[in-house]
Image 1 (spheres, rainbow over the protein chains, first blue to last red):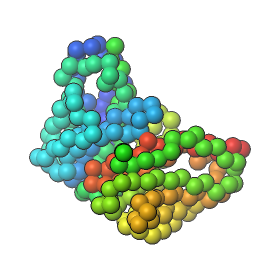
Image 2: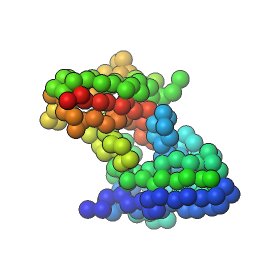
Image 3: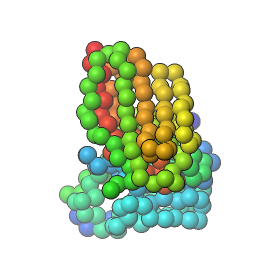
Image 4: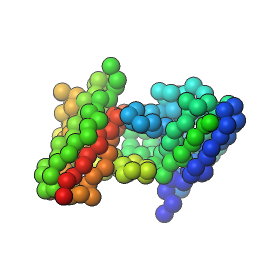
Length: 112
Length: 107
């Protein structure tokens, strides 16, 4: 019963470096989401994918790209990391739009 | 105005009290509403999921939706120290979250 799995759990990057955060779900869900969580800001949607082959911007998409590789996997890429992208990143999935979402345990990213 | 508003707290109540957590929202098209609980350094876990107006009960938890007022609530009965966490409301197709309310249950 893995649910939603995120890798890595922790990462430190230097400004300007790139990296990809991986997310995989084993619940056969159609919709997947990427959020960032900062102190006092709650969870803010970066991108979401309503179904395989589709992606759409959320509230804070600047500086990020996503790929819905297949139904199971949804990756988030930082092309040129900035200190403002220091945050905890959560991936989530749901059976469809407007159904309850289930979350991974998060990736703590620090950009120095 | 943000789509979903939630008082960040912190809210401190004695053990055994009834806790009331609330969110307001601006988009009348929202029909699906969720409450999540998040412990420190963990991912959010789903507590309650409701559709449209009305009440839904699950053990010590009751979720209430008033679409006419664009107001949702989560009630926790017989609160326990283990209920101390951040509670987040969420709604909509893109699952928009409130900022979360930090709750402390005092033994």
